Length: 262
Image (cartoon, rainbow, N blue to C red; front, side, top):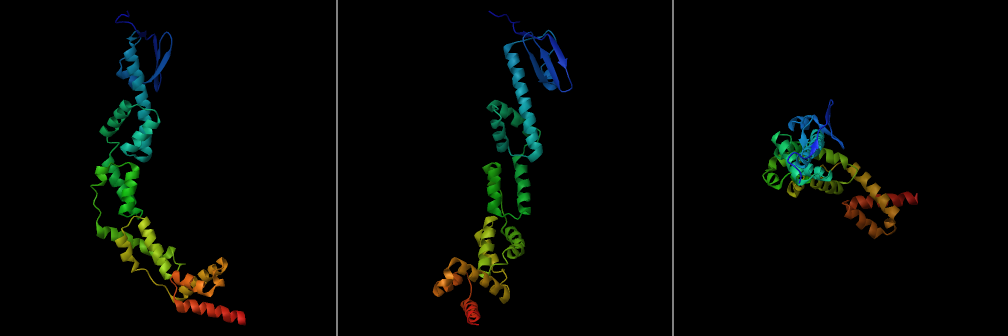
């Protein structure tokens, strides 16, 4: 049987700026200065297998904690996101719990604060309710926190309205109907409710007659490249389907025919 004093004796300790090295008869073990201090190590101390295991586990936790701190410093991740990163590094459930507890107690991980920070960020990016909620779930914010959020309709409408001029400019090359369709689709992609998007369509400017005709000429040219213009009836239906007025369609088709006759 092994005696109570059996184990590995520390023959020498080399203390550096960042690490301490424990020298045994058969190996050397480098540990952090915090671990060295916490375990009250000294030359001549005999470490049992259990004590060696505790020291090595503490070292593993220190390494994982440093990695977690780096992640927190770079991106302020949620608890869920950080757990996923630690799992990828091979951390055990017990080690993960320890690290999360340390970071939570120090205030470095706070899912509620992260949620509010992301909320402000997303609103400044012009995102609506649905897009914001989707983003929070993707970031790993707990469901019970997300469900507690309240979105004010007037605030959503105001932020969506602020985007309208930019969206109209983005889709200026399209005719009035197409422009409205694209503005509506863009607002939905940004996460605004369909009711708000539909309401804002009434504010989309029709544009002048010249711009409508320019857009019509482009789509008519496209129809010709596709071979649709070879059939007069199909051409008219194609352009009507894109929201152009019948009289404008007939105008450019007549003008083209007159040009061909000249």
